Amino acid sequence: MPLIAVLPGDGIGPEVTTHARRVLEALDLGLEFQEAPIGGAAYLAAGRPLPAETLALAKKADAVLFGAIGDPRFEGLERRLRPEAALLGIRRELGLFANIRPATLFPGLEEASPLKAEVVKGLDIVIVRELTGDVYFGEKGRRTNIEGLRQGYDVMSYNEGEVDRIVRVGFEMAKRRRKKLCSVDKANVLETSQLWRDVVNEIAIEYPEVQLTHMYVDNAAMQLVRRPADFDVIVTGNLFGDILSDQASMCAGSIGMLPSASLSAWSGANGMYEPIHGSAPDIAGQGKANPCAAILSAAMLLRHSLVNEAAAKRVEAAVGAALAKGARTADLGGSLSTTEMADAVLQELV
Ligand code: NAD
Ligand code: IPM
Ligand code: MN
Image (cartoon, rainbow, N blue to C red):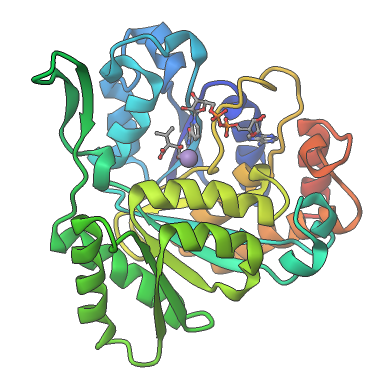
């Protein structure tokens, strides 16, 4: 019986994760679920954002269903005790270097995007974001410089092995789709990016069927608003991928629509499935959160960890059918509560 670790986390994390779990349960696949605290919730319960028991459960599970972490009450804590440290820690400990963030516009959501309908029409892109390196995991700290001024620093670096494995995920993804890969970097300024670009070009020789382009991240941010549907697969580093995926979410109508899969291998491995959004303290506890990103993350869990494409498609189709009938939470311009939206999806699950 496959074991699913459920880590609801903070804020709207538990509110949306409960419905992703309901959807998985409704499929009747004989899954076993075990829940554990993470983030601010774990700090309150155990004094640490990533308790050893939570990490052990995540390691032993076949897949992890993650909600969101983050709590303004803990922003003043030393960094290793903050909720965010748990998310970074679990990604690193599980070796989840590949974060797959699809941004798809479901038909009918054109009006939910602040961009014009004709600009976002047909949007179907995947951002492949590196997840365990970059400036996120380099040396960081505070010091006093020679002028006596306080200085903060975070070292950005990638080694060629880290670039190689994520770029291959990008090419493999593009090969299975419209065969266009755009590598996003800042090679005109950053040496980290120049190495990234060199490695991409070396690997490209192995994928002659994929049309490769390189784009600077500032231009990519602009093109994502100008002609987002022209992209197919974007591969990029941890920081650029974090920023561009939140931006891409608005091309798809709302950040409440974007799921992700964090993987340690292309397929079949244990992975973590996480909406790209955070704990949304501004709407937490109000029943307003859109559960679709969490539900679509469950679909990705079915696809990548349980290798059950049919079940994944059933879940995605149910979300599409509910939206087609007009089901909308507030972020999409509607008035359904989190539970009502999830119920609408569950009703379409055939
Ligand atoms: P956020 O993603 O939590 O919220 C940004 C905005 O989007 C807010 O206005 C929020 O209400 C809205 N929003 C997000 N998800 C939504 C949903 N499902 N339905 C409707 N509206 C939604 O980002 P933030 O406000 O910058 O960060 C809040 C906290 O979350 C911080 O502590 C941050 O570190 C953390 N965070 C965690 C994750 C994660 O757990 N993966 C991701 C991003 C931010
Ligand atoms: C995300 C979040 C995280 C990140 C934070 C909360 C550590 O923004 O999952 O996109 O930057 O990766
Ligand atoms: Mn983010």
